[in-house]
Amino acid sequence: MLISDVTSAAKRISGRVVRTPVITLPELDATVGARVVLKSELHQHTGAFKIRGALNKLLAADPGSRRQGVVAASSGNFGRAVAMVAQQLGIPAHVVLPGDVPEVKVAAVRAHQAHVVHYDPLRDDRDVITADLADRLGLRVLPSSDDPDVAAGHGTLALELFDQAGALDLLVVPVGGGGLAAGCATVAKALNPRIQVVGVEPADGDDTARSLRAGHRVSIPTPSTIADGLRHRAPGRFTFEVNSRLLDRIDTVTNEQIVAAMEFLWRHGRLMAEPSGACALAALLAHHRGPAGLRIGVVLSGGNIQPDRFHRMLAADTAAKYV
Image 1 (cartoon, one colour):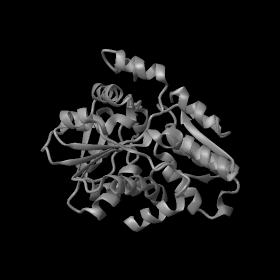
Image 2: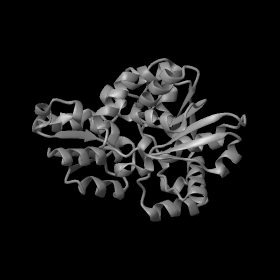
Image 3: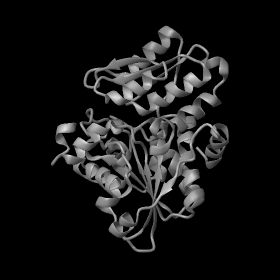
Image 4: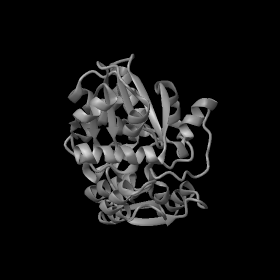
């Protein structure tokens, strides 16, 4: 994947996605000892970055190949994005969701008239379920991250960030399936080969970190992290190839560190990030300090969480009970 793929995606989806804001918090700069800009996909359509990749993938496809409808497996945010885009294009959508996905994400998918199929993440293989639906119903499968068009769409976030914030020394981005990291790292390294790009995973869902150490893709048991959007068991084939070349390292964060980042965003910015959306900031707060002139970009990837659950998590002494 090249930066030209991302710029083409940006032209394709222009006017259909929100050019989300970059936010600065004086308290964050003081805590970290550097200048930090937050790219807030909390303000995106569907409340997360996922619409960028879903929209690019569908708009790049031959209209005839999508006429029968589409199917996507998701932890919630990609499914919502697919449902919204499919409704806009007038095509049927089926979304395969884990049975324990937060209800706010299920309701959001159904609000766009998509058909929801639940599975047990501890016993079922969602890819098998998705492939079976595609075969039986003649649907086009939309990968949530492991696809060049999807990753290029996600990378448009970084194009915006650098245009809005200027040069950066460090970019911190969450890693689930790896499409967001691959797209953003492609842009960042093309614009500034010396930039450090750090991926962030939950400590209980560190499949990409383990794979990078091993030098090949490895699979882990289903993670129990509160970051439900990052509960991947293995990195994608395409995304791992890109990320193994372009990511400088992977940091991991605990449930407690994630909740601390959510609380920081709420207290100082009145920003309500979901656990997955706060992971990159959690790593910054836990692992990075200065120097004062350093310019850091942090991706807040999503904010789809029920307010009552959000406030319960912040009020709790530990995040364990919310796994």
